Length: 114
Picture 1 (cartoon, one colour):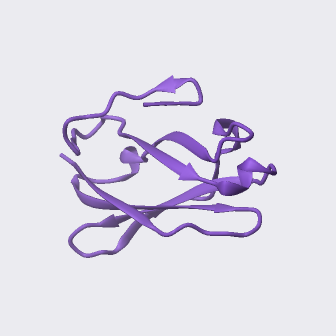
Picture 2: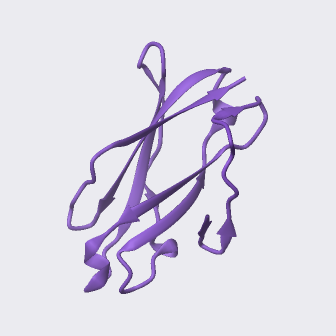
């Protein structure tokens, strides 16, 4: 998986050792890129998988550096803040938004820190 000149090799597991740097790869579909140049970003929350309590909430991460004019599919690689989380099971919620403003549906994934 490649985004912004970086390559990410997928892990065969969603379990990571404490001190590891998990990365996320997402693809954002932004149809406005076919005809204009909107500002686009992603946001994410990390929830405790057992209690569903939010343990981390990101600011908007701009992804314009990953965009190619005319291509509505934007591949994005970003770091998860594992250094701010204790060992445990987590749910990642992620969504995209643009300057129109439009907001995508929330997508989720699970991971564990050991």
